[in-house]
Amino acid sequence: MIEITDPEDKKILTLARSTRARTAAAQGASVRDTDGRTYAAASVDLPSLRLSAVKVAVAMAVSSGSQGLEAVAVLGEEAAVSEDDLAVVRDFAGSGVPVLLATPDGTVQEQRTS
Image (cartoon, rainbow, N blue to C red):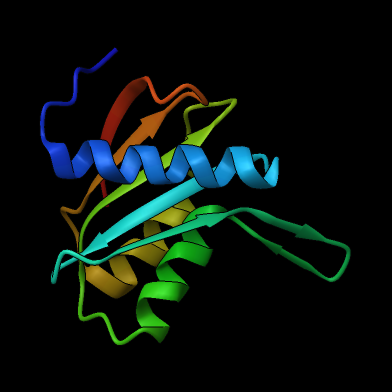
């Protein structure tokens, strides 16, 4: 378990957690862009469209005109992020973006970087 003290990181964890809970999705994610704006998303699992919560959150940031990311939070039954998700973060924001991996209750289990 990793203790998070930064209030902005706590905020994106809370947003990801509430989005996941509200939608009953497998995964919730939230990103904070370089202007401090946040975007929260849930995974999409339709017969014709499957997207991770990270991909949806990054797409929301991109489509809103964001220029980069400061941090990413991902919550799910498994505190994990795929290499595809990390590649999406790197494609948009470059390497070195912190990615917080947490359980559904918001407990951060690991921190990775893009």
